[in-house]
Amino acid sequence: MLAYSAPSTVEEAVRILAGASGVAKVLSGGTDLMVQIRSGRTKPELIIDTKKIPGISGIRERDGAFVIGAATPGAVIGECEALKRAWPGIVEATNLIGSTQVQGRASLAGNLCNASPAADSVPALIAARATCVVAGANGQREVPVESIVTGPGRTSLKPDEFIIAFHLPKPPPRSADAYLRFIPRTEMDIAVVGAAVNVTLDQGGACTDARIVLGAVAPTAVLVPEAAIALIGRKLDETALAGLDRAARQACKPIDDKRGTIEYRTKVAGVMARRAAVIAYQRAGERR
Amino acid sequence: MSKHHVSTTINGEPTEFLCEPQLTLLDVLRDELRLTGSKEGCSSGDCGACSVTVDGRLVCSCLMLAVEAEGHAIETVEGLARGQDLHPLQRKFLEHAALQCGFCTPGVLVAAKALLDRNPDPTETEVRYWLAGNLCRCTGYDKIVRAVLDAAVELRAE
Image (cartoon, each protein chain N blue to C red):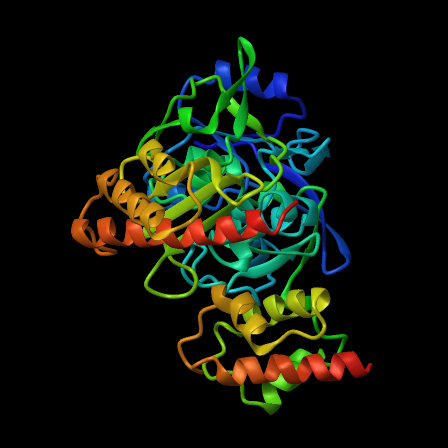
């Protein structure tokens, strides 16, 4: 039988999680969890709703850096003009998740901890060097977003742990991010390939730093350092783009499924990485 | 089994109910409170037939536990009309014949109202994207989109 608990502090939530005897699930927006309960894929005995914890939902800006509460709905993220200016790629990735209705509830922590290889916000968060604050019985730790997902449906979080917030750094001058997703329609689908690019340029427009992350082409989102090497030190010329394309394709370890074959996903990963890089460069160039 | 006592506001009326923790807001709206306007289509957040707003935010009531409604304001399709006076959206849906079987209509109306509350002058593209989570298997959507745009014109003139 299912029990429901809505603790009002992080400490209380951790105590309940640590003391749970059976399967306990943390609830933020529930847009994945509720579907999995309905289908029988997960059978929790306890649901711990985090939304009564102060600060768990909402966005705070300090000196250009951002703290996004773990349960902040996508719709709220999409309405935050300061965040859109600083990290447009993260906002566009988050707002691609599901319908208007899903955006009304779906959260970054849920998208990450659901651990789907095709999660849209995850490549963009990793490209931005976002970290997450994990609360547990031993206190809090701050870890890179890429350390959380270990495989489809699996995370590195311990049974007594949950994510309470995401930290986004202040973007360096002349830097910007972008996220593109390929799906066979324009809305309401799961990524065949996702590509996030975050670049920093020098005064002359050459790339000094880059992070390229692919989604839906491996068991987890993949950071591709070789793709960054192809861009660094260059303007966005054909040599840089060809190197990026090649590195992106080489990083793919996709599956064959109804959304795309291995060959197709691999090819599209290169194309999406190129196009996202073009957008990120353009945005970075427009910034002082 | 222990039931939860939930205090909420539904269509402006303070409302209390008892529910088991596994019940969705849609279950309680329909089976407990007898507000059967919200429909159960897919139960997975894909079809939008169960759309309601929570504190003005559009959500699928099938993807929300009823206990989560504690302290929040819910609006359903039953809250659209004022007595016998239909909401302009409802009138425009009739005028444009923007429905056939009608199963998706309550969800579409609630979603469209949430759009017009935020954006009184949406483009056709904005209407189509906003309503992408409301599936209709009858109309082909054109009549729905025209009805929403026409209702927006009338609401702006008010």
